[in-house]
Length: 153
Image (cartoon, rainbow, N blue to C red; front, top):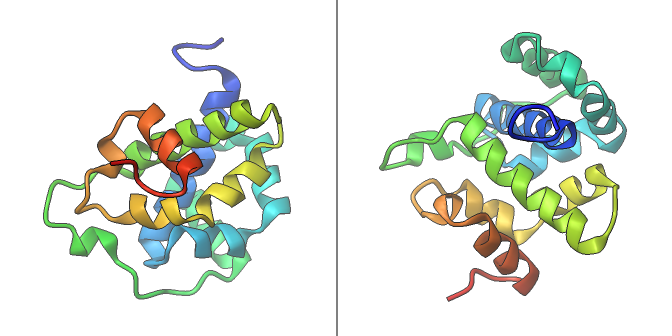
């Protein structure tokens, strides 16, 4: 344990925050970003997250956008938001907790497969809606909703 979170938690948090940042910069759904970067490159970023974390995130994002060929999209959830906008770090933490819960539930250490699954699932579109309050919900509620396949009533 280093600080409040484990190294694993910090590394997943960084990767998820980077994905969120790139998605906002390129105006794409998070799944588009994850799929464009690909599993191998995401694994590489995850393995070196503690190194990347000490670099400028804008520089890392620009390099990934270019190397993955991520084009500008038309999804701008930040501009569409009617309320205070959570930072990409805030949303990164939401995804991080969900991905770690999925891995723990499945008793797996394959973080990147779980990450790709979560970002390509229905819940990612719900979390992208900054006019809803899902991203503010308790992490356990988000996880149970994910398992259920829909937002719990």
